[in-house]
Length: 86
Image (tube, rainbow, N blue to C red; front, side, top):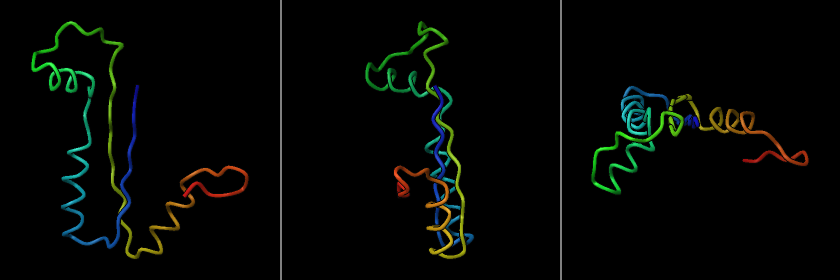
């Protein structure tokens, strides 16, 4: 399984870029299931089948203004019954 996350933020400054880079690193994990089992059971996991992988990949998208960010978020999400999900 693969989970993709994109964090949107404003304003797009050097400081917020550094913070968001740390956030992206924190929420990127090539094999989340192994990490969860290791944390819960406090043991090394070596016998899980390869097809039991949950991969999490994060990204960040910066915007100059909050209005631009909201427009991006509304357009990025699908809609149901003609209404945006956000």
